[in-house]
Length: 241
Image (cartoon, rainbow, N blue to C red):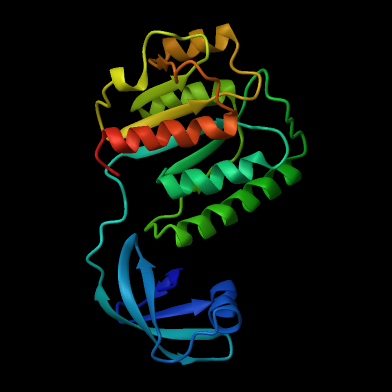
């Protein structure tokens, strides 16, 4: 069944408007009495299409779904910005894996520099739309938040303030692996460096913030691959896969 995130619902009737209305009617070509999944306040329901208005689809909420879609572990992915369109792949695939939030970061070796605030916000809006589509496709009950771009120092402050385990894959670490660490709570902050990796001073700052620096083995993963691998392993370790 197709999936829609609902903003307007009185408990019995849910409304599809805007892009969802057009997608439902013109792209999916759904009809009256067709069933759909409705996500309301992070809960999944089975709905039935009752009628089509000029700009609204009216759906009846039939029953709550029996499926538990979301992980008990909340992963915040701090991703140093990669070149070109790689961030789109990162957002899409990590949404599928199950992350709760994606925070783009500018570190010292980050090649991409967005000095124009308008351009930056346009990028974030694009990534947010990709997260929404990936959440629908992967049957999520939440859409991961894609935050505005932050500096490395801003990220450190956020990590200290928000709490949770901090996990940093680093190519020069050769002792501690992901299998050697334990997730102590229900929040994991995963920090992925840029194409050129983190500088040694940045790693020291992360250690001072309480980060666990880990190796991902003898092979070097691309920045767009590393987060997917780490987050998948964390989901497996915490029995969320």
